[in-house]
Length: 281
Image (cartoon, helix red, strand yellow):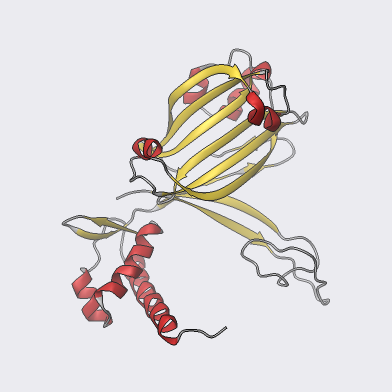
């Protein structure tokens, strides 16, 4: 395949501009202004379209914030939230900032075909459905749709969904100790209704999480799908790569972000994942 020299040159120029702006960001504090587009074009020797393309990437990544009529500013510091799981407990440690929930809907209804397959119950079995808006320091961050087996949590109240840690409440008030979760993440965009709740433009990028949680007895307890703002939430994974002296043996498949053939020998690659929340200035 022949590479277009002009396209390749434009891409490399944008990367150079992006790196230069990143240096400006790293040298400043959250909320500080960076030079104007005109000043940056002059100092970097690039056109306005090239500069804007690089700036757009940094805005989408949550590193810069544009304010109409005022300019561009370094986004505020990030806070982290990490999922920790072991054989005896399952917890979501409190992240920096103040996390709160606003209950949008809370009802008891039949599981239905799709949710019943997730929770391994009859379609007619009752579940507790809750929709809640998650906020960080009062700013909307995510919309969660929870489906919990009603027979495992009789008497679960709306207050338990708005206050405290849900898994702690399940353990302490209902005797349900969650121990494992399988979660998938994929990119999506928000609908108009979701955009109104999250205070973002319609069709803004978002991350869709789906999670199935089981307890220490192997029972499916909770199925959740959540929509997180793409401009303020990203996923960070820490990989532990085994190092061996002998020649690695190729295996089928590969880990996301690691090209096939890299680090495929020896012990499996292990990883931990955390979410990073980007505050607005």
